[in-house]
Amino acid sequence: MPTFSLIICTYNRVDYLKETIESIWNHFGNRFEYEMIVVDNNSTDGTAQVAQQYAHIPVFKYYKELKQGLSHARNRGIEEAKNEVLVFLDDDIDIESNYLDRGNALFGDASVQIAGGKVLPFKVEVPPWLPRKFYYLVSIFDLGNERILTKKLMGANYAMRKDAALKIGWYNPELGRKGNTLTGGEEIDYLDRAKNLGYNIWYDPGLIVYHKINNKLNKEYVFTYSFQLGRSERIIDLQQSKVKYGLKVAKAFAMLFAYLVYGSYTPDQKQRAYFKINQQYSLGYLSGN
Image 1 (cartoon, one colour):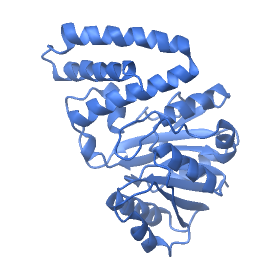
Image 2: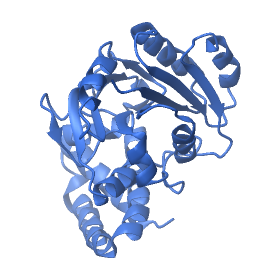
Image 3: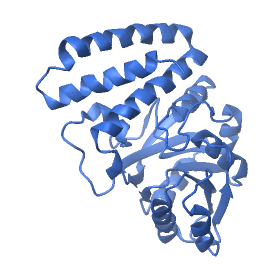
Image 4: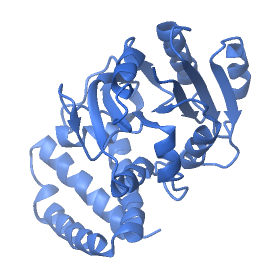
């Protein structure tokens, strides 16, 4: 049976973090071979003091990473992990009670190296103006109810064997959130590098977490994150493919034109959001570092 290292990176989310730790411990207890690793990315809200409350839990481990940025925190988690399979989870989730049962079955197959699953909203409805295509911007991810190969997973819920992670390398510290900045893209870059090394990426619908996203379900967050994602993907494309970068620059200008001549005027709220998201992504992509 595989062993698991559940890696939870956190920054100034102490109340959510407490609920996440308790969700994992209440569901799994000591029934599985796992460790729960909390990487505190230089929080200032008392996270370290609260973590001490869980020191009695035998699977619980706490580390403070002073280099600011989610990529640095994830890299620290990889360094500290002692078990075979690394599971990356956000600090604001409730985990499905059969998650590790499903993980045992999935990673019991030696051919499976990387896999992730559903990230569903926790007790909240998605606003009607947000197109389903862009649910990922508010950290919702659902590719259906069949196990399939995929190109992308969501950083709130994916796993890989540590041997694979060490071959792929470290998360890029130019990418990923830094403090309160909504920069992203670190898992996109990481999985792109995994694919380039020949790793298959699996989506398994039984690996489920529920994400507490109330603070993300507004237009300001969605449009700001779209802009920052454009900036992040520009960095990735410049490092990986100049041809792809050139094509996406042309597409960005086309999307800006489409927003000006149609998208900003359409009466349909989902269409307006669709074009506004693309406009902000394009502006971010063209903005440079």
